[in-house]
Image (tube, rainbow, N blue to C red; front, side, top):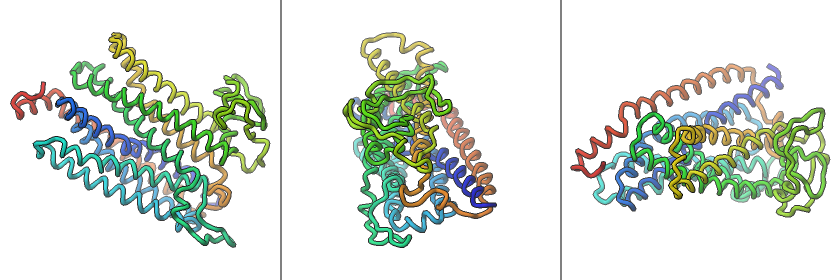
Length: 448
């Protein structure tokens, strides 16, 4: 296998691994916060339905954590096997956040185990709730530290490069690079947002399938409110991300927006197609790109004409940007409409067609996460370490990458199907109605 083939299969395998892992990683970051909020609401309102909600979510969460551990381990393995030149050059600089990510995971896992083991062992539920704080913190900081590594690849600093070697390494300076604040904030908040909409999707689906229990109605209302909060936060952070790109990665912003010429009063291009370099059928929003990039409708925005062809990211990232933004705006609108309608007691939110829209929100949120990650990674091309090392120079020359691709694809298929089967059986054999009845008997009629 030549280097070009090895590079191709290395990129495909890395994309496959990250695309699969991000599903479980997103849930792994967001669900602990949802569990903690549900249990806190249950304690505050003295409502056993929310306590049970936290309990059932926690059971399902354990399955996703197990799969996330496997895929996360695969990523670490593939960094060394598929991108040895990158790890040799930058390994010493990014070793600290990689180690801290592992520490954060174990911190989360320890308290998650204690939390699960001590159900009904605390007379005061507030003490049990305290165990969820380190779980939620550990889950979020796992995302923080691993995203710092990705941020470093986009804005490398904290070292000097002399004769191809890194010297004067400062790991803390490398960690707190210019890309870190917006990338970390966006990853964490969108994980919360996506988890809320996934749980809302499940609750709406159960209501559609005939389980009209108040438990599911409470779950739906809580998660849609959380989805609204975090979708608004994601939009605000997305605006900051645009301003970061304008200053530090203008070629990525220009490629994502099909902004070919440097100009003032720049318009934002949504949708459309490219035909021989000409944009057709697009929606053009005057001044919006200048506002996104600089907060000033008359500011100049750097175009692709300022960069050599071999440094311009693939232009199809425009479609990824459109997918991410469109879904994000739709989910913010849908959740705002739901919350406002519930406040006004409008009955249409209980209709089948509207609940099907909510059911679709979970998969759509995950598609937006995938599109965002693909845009982040492809938009950095042709660099694996921006301005220092190209992707083609970082990859292995091994002739076995195609075999690895087949083996890992098989592993992910087994893990994906297996996790879905286990989760379906877990909740199908233990429906909420039966669990409520069992707990009512145990507690002498405390839950209805």
